[in-house]
Length: 137
Image (cartoon, rainbow, N blue to C red; front, side, top):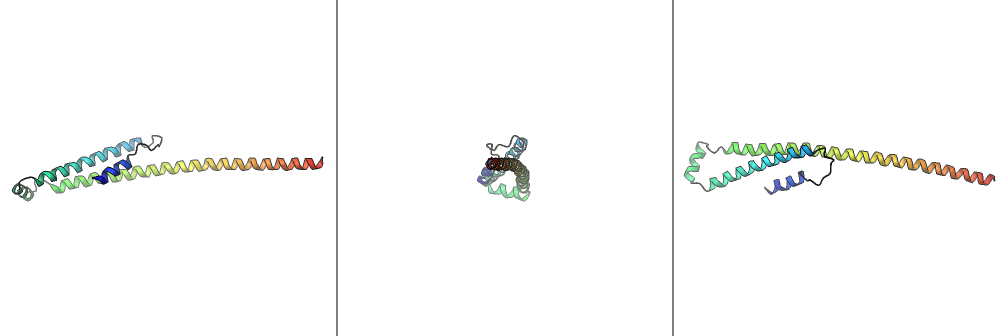
């Protein structure tokens, strides 16, 4: 249970600023995580209740498969797979967004650097012309 708690806090960090582009996805992922918690808790509650029941009743229920443990486990696994798939999609979107920001920042810095180099070359050329003018004078 601690694994899922820590995982959800990492996936659903609210302090990440992304401009709101993935807010809806984040809410969907949050819903999936809540569904996973519900399935896990239901399975655990049912397990604990089964441990404290009369063993004869448990044996009878297991023989006729009244409790459907396989179905309950499958629902937990399905919920976990849904969270995994949604978190992969969400993380891919976040990575893509960060890479786009990195590319934009790099382009801006490249443009600024080229402008600075151009300005320095013009200044250098102007200074050289001034020196030649001074020599001529």
